[in-house]
Amino acid sequence: MRKMASSLLSELTRILLCAFVLSVHSPFEKKVHVHGAQITVPVGYLSPSANCTASTTNVNSTLELVHKYGARSQLFDSGPINHTRVLLEDMARVKWIQSKISNSISGTSDLEESALNLTASFGPDRSGYVVTIGLGTPTKNLTLLFDTGSALTWTQCEPCIVSCYSQAEPIFDPSQSSSYANISCSAPSCINLPSGTDQQPGCSDSTCVYTVSYGDLSSSSGFFATETLTLTPTDVITNFEFGCGEDNEGTFNGSAGLLGLARDPVSFLEQSASQYGQYFSYCLPPLSSCTGYLTFGRGMDTSPSLNFTPMLTVGQNSLFYGINITGISVAGNPLSIPSTVFSNSGTILDSGTTLTYLPPLDTCYDFSGVSTITVPVITFSFSGPINVDLDASGMFYWVNASQVCLAFVPNIADTNVSFYGNIQQRTFEVVYDVPGGQIGFGAQGCS
Ligand SMILES: *[C@@H]1O[C@H](CO)[C@@H](O)[C@H](O)[C@H]1NC(C)=O
Ligand SMILES: *[C@@H]1O[C@H](CO)[C@@H](O)[C@H](O)[C@H]1NC(C)=O
Ligand SMILES: *[C@@H]1O[C@H](CO)[C@@H](O)[C@H](O)[C@H]1NC(C)=O
Ligand SMILES: *[C@@H]1O[C@H](CO)[C@@H](O)[C@H](O)[C@H]1NC(C)=O
Ligand SMILES: *[C@@H]1O[C@H](CO)[C@@H](O)[C@H](O)[C@H]1NC(C)=O
Ligand SMILES: *[C@@H]1O[C@H](CO)[C@@H](O)[C@H](O)[C@H]1NC(C)=O
Ligand SMILES: *[C@@H]1O[C@H](CO)[C@@H](O)[C@H](O)[C@H]1NC(C)=O
Ligand SMILES: *[C@@H]1O[C@H](CO)[C@@H](O)[C@H](O)[C@H]1NC(C)=O
Ligand SMILES: *[C@@H]1O[C@H](CO)[C@@H](O)[C@H](O)[C@H]1NC(C)=O
Ligand SMILES: *[C@@H]1O[C@H](CO)[C@@H](O)[C@H](O)[C@H]1NC(C)=O
Image (tube, rainbow, N blue to C red; front, top):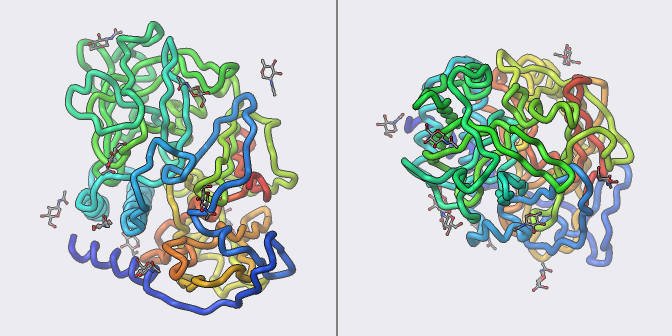
C-alpha cells in the first residue's frame, strides 16, 4: 500500500514541481488568436478565478452544466480548491476503472485496495461537473454529478437509515412523492442490475436493494425504485429506475448523487432511449466559472464542425466509452510515440477524470506577471482519421499563476488503459452517438 501511495505521490510531485519558461506577449492582445501551430491567449483565460462572460440559453432537453468547484455552483462553495486532493482522487478513479477493465470481476484487487485506502485517508470530496434535475411529484431539484463512467443514477433518500453525507439541497424523501414506487426483487430490471453495478442486488421485504461502489471507498446502497424524472418542463421521464440511497458514503459531498450515462440498460442513456435515441452531447466550459451544457437527443448540436471517431469497447467492460488515439502532435510535429502505445491498451473518454493519462508530457510554467501567452497547439489524432486541436483551456491544470501545468499524467505502464480527461474536452461539443457507434468532437461548442 505504502509503495503504491508513494509512487502516486511521486507522480504528483512530477506534475507539481516543475518549472519552464514560455514565450510571453505584450498585454495588448485581448482575444484568443490561433495562427498556424501556435495559440495565443490572455493568461486570465486559463485562470479559474476569471469571471465568466459567456451565457447559455436554456432549450428543451438541455441542462446547464457547471463545474462543482466553479463560481456558478453556489451549492458547493467550500473555499479554495485543494489541488492535491483533486489529483489524488483523479488517480484513484483512473486506477479503479483500469482495474475494472483489466479484470472485470467485482471485489478488490491490490490496486483497487490501495486506491481505496489512498482516497479514504485523504478525505471526502470529488471533482467533476454537476447538473440539476427534478425528481418526484411534486418535483424536487437535485444536483447530481454527471458521469459517463458509471451507469446507475442514484440520490440520497430519507430515511438515511445507515448514513447520508451532507448535501446542499434537502435530501429526497420518497414518502413525500406520489410517483415513487419500489421495484420488486423478481423484476427483470432488478435481476439485471449487476451488469450496471457490478454487484448482486439484495432483497428486503420483496423490495430490490441495490449497492454500487466506486474505487475510492465511496458507495451508495438502498432501494431500487422508479420515479418521475424531470429534466426540463417539457422533458419528463416517467417510471425512471434509480437508486434511492439510504446508506451513502464517500466523496460526493455537496451533490445529491450521480447521473449515470454509461452504456448499460439501467443507465439514463438507455432508459430515455425512446425520447432521445441514445444520443447525447455535452460541452465543458473553458473556465470553471462558466456554464456548459448537457443535452439529449439529435439535432441539438451547437458546434459548426463535428468530426467523428469510432466508439469502441476497451477490454471486457462495455460500460465505458472507448476511443482510439492514433497520435499526438505538438505544433504540428508528431510526438515519437508509437501508435501501438495507445491502441494496445485502449483509451477511455471520461467525464469524471480530470487529467489525461498518457506517456509523459508533464511540465509546468510560471505565468506570474504575464498577461498573454503563446503555446504550441497540441493535436490529438483519433481513428477516423480526425484531428482535435485542444483549446488553450484544455492544455493546462491551473494551480496558481506561478504554477500552471500541462494537464497530462504518465501512466504507470504502456499496458495500462489511457484516459482522455475532462480538461482536454473543454470548449468542445462532445457527442455520444451510441446507435451510430461514434463519438464526435466539435470545436467551439461553448465558451
Ligand atoms: C470578477 O468579478 C468580481 C465582482 O465583479 C471582481 O471583484 C473580481 O475582481 C473579478 N475577477 C477578475 C479576475 O476579474
Ligand atoms: C420545446 O418543446 C415544446 C413542446 O414540445 C415545443 O412547443 C417548443 O417548440 C420546444 N422548444 C424548442 C426551442 O425546441
Ligand atoms: C498497469 O500496468 C502495470 C504493468 O504492466 C501492471 O502491473 C498494473 O496492474 C496495471 N494497472 C492496472 C490498474 O491495470
Ligand atoms: C489500508 O492501509 C493499511 C496500512 O496502510 C493496511 O493495514 C490496510 O490493510 C489497508 N486496507 C485495505 C482495505 O487495503
Ligand atoms: C489537501 O489535501 C491533502 C490530501 O487530501 C491533505 O493532505 C492536505 O492536508 C489538504 N490541504 C489543505 C490545505 O486542506
Ligand atoms: C429548480 O431548477 C430549475 C432549473 O435550474 C429552476 O428554474 C427552478 O427555479 C428550481 N426550483 C426550485 C424550487 O429551486
Ligand atoms: C418501499 O420498500 C420499503 C421496504 O420494503 C418500505 O419500507 C417502503 O414503505 C416502500 N415504499 C413504498 C412507497 O412502497
Ligand atoms: C461538505 O459539504 C458541506 C456543505 O455543503 C460543507 O459545509 C462541508 O465543509 C463539506 N465537507 C467537506 C469535507 O468538503
Ligand atoms: C487504432 O488505431 C491503430 C492505428 O491506426 C490501428 O492499427 C488499430 O487497428 C486501431 N484499433 C481499433 C480498435 O480500431
Ligand atoms: C503556487 O502553488 C505552489 C504549490 O502549491 C506553491 O508552492 C507556491 O508557493 C504557490 N505560489 C503562489 C504565488 O501562490
